[in-house]
Amino acid sequence: MPFSLRKIPFSVQILLGLVLGVALGFLARSNDLSWLTSTLHTVGSLFVQLLKLAVPPLVFTAIVVSVVSLRGVANAARLAVKTLMWFGITALIAVSIGIGLGLLTNPGRGVTLDLGGAAPPKNTGSWTDFLTGIVPTNPVGAFVEGNVLQIVFLAVVVGAAALLVGEPAEPFVALNRSLLEIVQKALWWVIRLAPIGTLGLIGNAVASYGWDLLAPLAKFTTAVYVGCAIVLFVVYPLVLILAGRLNPLRFFAGAWPAIELGFVSRSSVGTMPVTQRSVERLGVPREYASFAVPFGATTKMDGCAAIYPALAAIFVAQVFGVDLGIGDYLLIAFVSVVGSAATAGLTGAIVMLTLTLSTLGLPLAGAGLLLAIDPILDMIRTATNVAGQALVPTVVAAREGTLDRAAYESAGRRDLTDPEPVADTRPELSPVPA
Image (cartoon, rainbow, N blue to C red; front, top):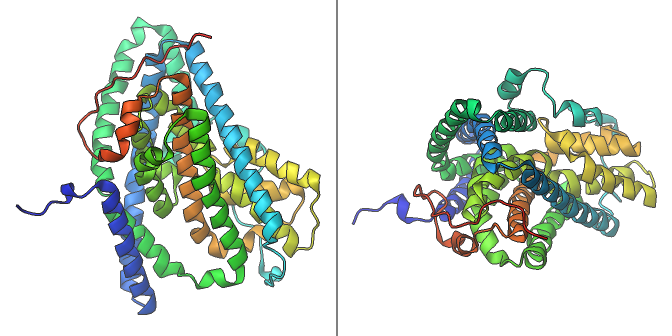
């Protein structure tokens, strides 16, 4: 019987692409093969561009259709409130871990860097970004720029209006349903290319940066990876067990392709289509997943907006000889929980870091000290982001009684890229009696 890639599970294909990419990256770096580095960069960039290409129409049509199909504003409002509540709870836990690790490891003590060469990054954050990042000045511009949070805002408004208009809006709703089916079919083709994209992305990262950049900042880098690992493999499993009565191993089996892709692509928004597919495979109702995942891709960033800015703020304060008090640590927690939405549509971790530094009154130039190793740190940060974006909808659906637990238990045994639809045995999204 002839060999076929379809016989290899999708997650294994991504893992093989990752291993081969690391090997090719080291080969290119050790032998100074610029052509190979350029090829890996091109392959990875094209894959991320294809993913991002599908995001605007996918987000808009999915949310419009889901708002109309909910047929109950009270139900949608309750789900939104509970989703945001769990976003905040898990973010608070993550930033607390970041602060704790920072106090335990003192990542900036004894670090000698050229402070004169440090400069503030081009993209900086402010509290006004929270508001201006939500409401677009031009609806077309939101799609052209790929600003997901603005697209979500537009889709919710349009969907709610279509719901209130009723029968006259049915042709518009039918058009969005058709477009959604088309986008999902095209997205299926892009998802199949994920192993090749993984090869290019991780290969280019190794070839371009290697591990030699980590030496001067080894303690800080280790703290970031340890903090993200604690959230990923300790906090999230405990939330699943205690809040959702769910088996964590089944969750990771279902969400792992999205987590892997987030690690190598370093883009929560670019990974969003795969995250949504994974969440639906875990048994979360599609109507709710189309709300929660796009919102999470722009505002749920436990890696970039909680662990990292907490550790980085402590690092910068120690490098510049600034003592932080209890009030400063509480301020870090507040900024991380409330201010993560200010990163929407911008360079997430850098903007969130500058927002934290400016709120604490620390030199913005401190962010420039960490730019050299940012690509390496961004891999684990984004993987943590994506895991959290899949976790919250799963837990909320479990607590609401709308999670298809049979689908959840079998998620790891079904290939993510299986085009056959899964039988939907989940209960309707209706209010749970008190």
